[in-house]
Every structure is written in structure tokens, then in C-alpha cells.
Picture 1 (tube, helix red, strand yellow):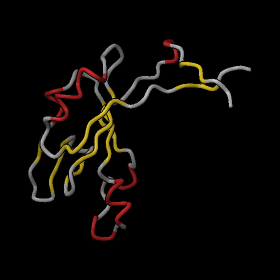
Picture 2 (picture 1 turned 90 degrees about the vertical axis):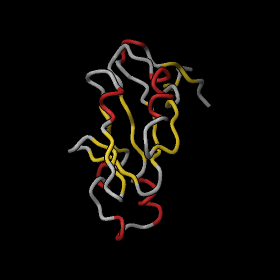
Picture 3 (picture 1 turned 30 degrees about the vertical axis):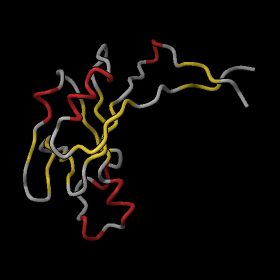
Picture 4 (picture 1 turned 45 degrees about the vertical axis):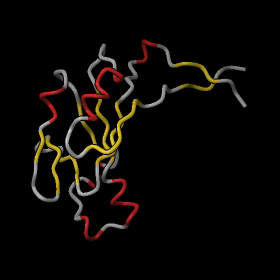
Length: 118
């Protein structure tokens, strides 16, 4: 097994905030809102710094009809990432994101590592 090496700061890799939405919620990237099946909408951009991106973990399921999805696909549809601009700490936004309607779980992604040299 190779020892791990940390990613150099100059690599430009940012740690995202990982988010799992509650059942019957999803993120609509075109409208940039969290939306419930009942039609309630929440625009998260007001709580985040400029140039923050919110992306689905599985973009191909963004607009899929839940009725035709398997249980696993429905679960995958609930995961998004909040990618903050360079210089912002993901840990500083966990509590803010946790307070959003429709959010079930929030955590900072683990620190990536690269294989070390032998």
C-alpha cells in the first residue's frame, strides 16, 4: 500500500459541502432553487458568496421523473454539492446550509489525497 500525499495548495482543488436533500426535494439547476414535490421553492444563493456553484452529484437525474426511477436512483437524485469560491472555507457554511428547508444532511467532503512515491 502506498502512503498518501496531500494535494498541493496550488492544485486548485476546493473541498465542497456535500448535501443530502430530504425525500421529495430536489435541486433545479436551471431555476437555481431547491424545490419540493409540493411546489415550495427556496433560493439558496442569498446565503452564499458570489460565484458559488451548486451542482447535482448525478446530473443525468436532474429532471428525471421520479415515478420511473428505481429506489437507488431516487436516493442518488437527492445529493448535491455546494462548491464555494476560492478562499472560502466549506466548514464555515455547514450550519447555514443545514438550516435550508429540504436539507437532511450536510458535511464537508473529505480532504483528497494522492498516492505517495515509494
